[in-house]
Length: 218
Image (tube, rainbow, N blue to C red; front, side, top):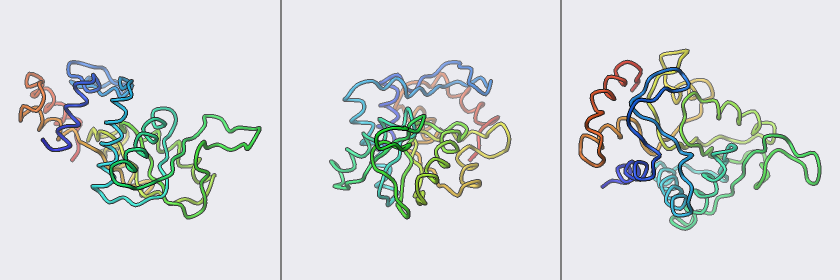
């Protein structure tokens, strides 16, 4: 199996990718759901970091620091930093934001690497649905230092148009901020994995393709 197929199987086995009928925040009825909150063990986090590191290495994204937006991005940035060093001997810094700036001690809004002007950063997140996490972290980053955003890495690109435009969230943030988003897998990859028998779920294929026809973008 390719590493993308392995990752899709990994999500299913750990209850992160599920099929059925789910009502999303948008109100849309989707035949699948992705809940990265179901990762909860050291073994899972080790593998997850390796998949993120593979995506960064595969796309040759060069950076100095990984940024994990609170809260789900925090363990992701740590696991990815460890995997990049263990598997690729790339020793990147990492940091994550506080929900409120610390007003005592050393102060500041970020924990970990203190950002400096010209530093290249990769933002590490789980799934991009609306681009909200990026929109929230960007002003915090720019307030800390004049950093360069080398890219954003997520686990799944839903390839789904937003509520306000005909573009996907990934396309919207590139158009608005010029930030390129890299995903370990896409919704097309997941559909292909079902068709090829990598994972179960052929009974949901028709509904998934219909959903893509109504809400999907390429």
